[in-house]
Amino acid sequence: MLGILIVLSVVLFAVGLYLFNTADFQQPSDNIDWSRYELIIDTDTLSACHFGSRKLNEYGLWEMRIAGNPIDRGAAYGLMNSKLLENQESVFVEQIHQMIPSEYWVEFLHKLILIFNRNMANYIPIEYRQEIYAMSLSCSDKYNGYGSPYVRQLNYHAAHDIGHAMQEYMLVGCSSFATWGTNSEDGNLLIGRNFDFYMGTKFAENKLILFVEPTEGYDFVSVTWPGMMGVLSGMNEEGLTVTINAAKGALPVSSAMPISLLARHILQYASDISEAYEIAEQYKTFVSESLMIGSVKDGYVAVIEKTPERIALYKAPNERIVCTNHYQSAMFADDEYNKENMQTSDSPYRMERINELLDSMVPMNVEKAVYILRNRYGVGNKDIGIGNEKSVNQFIAHHSVVFQPDKLRMWVSTSPWQLGAFVCYDLHDVFGKNQQVESYAIDSFTIPADTASVNNDCKRVVKYREQYNILMQAEKDLQRVSDDFIMEYINNNPHYYQVYNSLGDYMHIVGDNSSAILYWQQALSMEIPKMEEKMQIINKIERYD
Image (cartoon, rainbow, N blue to C red; front, side, top):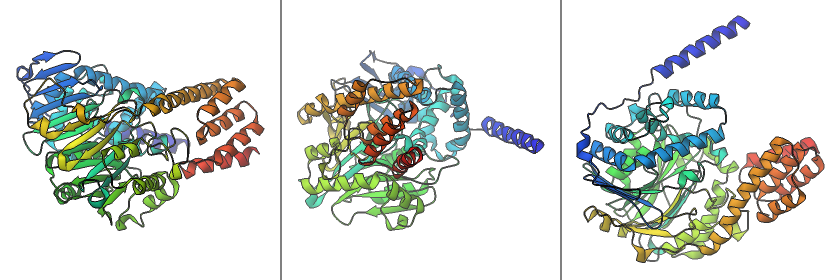
């Protein structure tokens, strides 16, 4: 038996080493004449060259405009963004090390991801590989131990997809909705979305509004972060919008086309829902995803529901549509992963809440859409605790956006989370003009910050997370916290199940099981996002009672 185990271990190691060493990310070999991209202006808040410009506006949003062929766009992007690229990568790596403190396991994860993504480049159009390659040449060599800048940046484009497999860790959520016809105040399309991708607070500090004028395809705008050339939320000059929402599926065993790059391809080359669907059919992806597509030409919004094996187009029965993190089409009605997701996750609850808000507020306008995206309460306006995953606003969103495709306008959230001002951009004003050093934001259309929530809820969110970390450290060190601390912890967020669940865990660790059970029972009386979490609490009560 020992001999068999040794042989198996050697074989697995050899296979892993082979896969790692033969991974081919198809780095382009284009020679780049850097004199073409010389920076005309280069300050901490403003950069410009022949192929683009980048500026920091008064709302704290970076506005970048790039034009030309893939190499032109990528090279200009990289030169103007080199400091932001280094900062974003540092924040990302730092967050990974916080999640996985052991350098050994970080290195193991790095090798595993390279093996997992070893054939990913086969599915990515050369246009995007060239763009990412040219951009990567301005990236720092600080993390070359994890691969060349090109390999790292290409792999970062699959981060959203890999986060699917870690939904239990609250990395990926997302809520979207749209109205038109009688459900909209002006009868036209109105689309709102929260992009809930959480990699720590620092990761979302540098939001980038990226305006792209490619030599092929349509001009478009994307709300993103430094280094992300894929699309998470965007609109093109034809009035087509794309937003992505994670869904549940089988655990992938190898990568294919990253969802963000598929969304980019749709936004750059589709002008209506039919064209978007045809593009989605052409590309194999490795995770399950909903792509909400709004189309001025069609006059409505539909959802492309896609898994690695199947694809469906869901059209709403009325003049509005809501998309959270489960499928709604007939094709996936009997899908086991989708059924389990609907039965055990917070996705149906958030959909119910959005529909409830829409019922009470139609016909919709931009201000009402922003109100829904900022709303943290549960069904029936019940207080379910700050940070609950059942909320539309979970205080983890990287960005929040409202689109008015008929007018080619969009509103983008500013910090903190989606409670800051929503800044308006009009694509007519951006793509209809030459590069400019002034901001493209239209101040007169700005939606003000929710100052009441900023002064109350935001402070409570920050305080809760600080208190939670203190409690976790005390649990780790087997140290007692004071009764005053416990009361402050409860009073700061009294309706959140996790406050009581964490107190129960802490009390158990320090040997007070009677108090632990009382706290766990209190947690069960509140809204718990996932069935798995609820069952874990029930099992703890039964085990230690």
